[in-house]
Length: 118
Image (tube, rainbow, N blue to C red; front, side, top):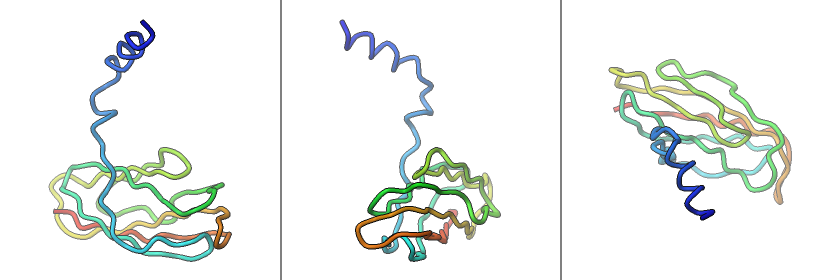
């Protein structure tokens, strides 16, 4: 009965809540206190989640620089959502930061993200 109640609640959630996947990011993961660069491709008008994965505990994060050809929204302390502008094709850049402590360092890391909009 309990699983039936959970299924009923899940069925009431909007379909778009589950439709957004993670951006397919390339680049080298870093440690807290070291800046990094990441790259991904996305189709115009589409949305993907952009998780900031740094080993350790992230205490604070945010947007350092907004994109010019898309919308960036912070979901929680480690995840952002990027939506590419419909009809635009080309490059976009934004920057996010995370502050925390990990096994190999601590401090603030800025991630510059280069998106290719197809």
